[in-house]
Image (cartoon, rainbow, N blue to C red; front, side):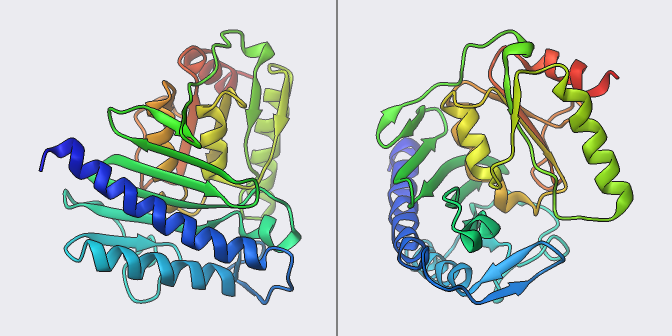
Length: 273
């Protein structure tokens, strides 16, 4: 089997898993949720767990030799401490329900995020929002798609006209909140407007399809939130990098993303008072 055909096979199973998990999310979206706290503002529900179980059973069935990781998965690699580095082996990196707080509140920016790294490189990405019925897909070297139609990042080249998305993160200690809000306050003078949608994966897809021009976040959960979106954005012609300006490290819990025109202007705006 050719490498491209193999990747297409991986994508097909990932889409199937995302759609099946999406049915679980959509079916319980308007129902009462039993909520557990992973932290002060970080939540997990029975739906997260059900989606996770479904996805991992399906991936294990089709790809028993692949590695797999999820933020909440309890019988595999399940945390930043245990999942401290990628290997060259094919590795599925999954967030079964990105935007759990949105899900709990009935805010429709929720998704399943399924990414695959090969040789440590994000190579397949699927992000599915079952509430809005939007399926983002990409295979490395093949372009990015929304519901089967090709997408590209925006052509905006003036930062003062840019729409930026970010998040405040899950930490609520005063030092972190002050640093975060000071950074946002500084950026508000340099861009058109700001959005906080509550889903890292969907923010990356928003840049990929041109709804957003810039996205950055520091201190999110981990590679589960971004691996699929990174493939999709890169295949849509966008750029991903560390907010310092260096290359993106999947494990760093730091990401910045722009279209192909705004990287330098954004970094200057981010770091200049």
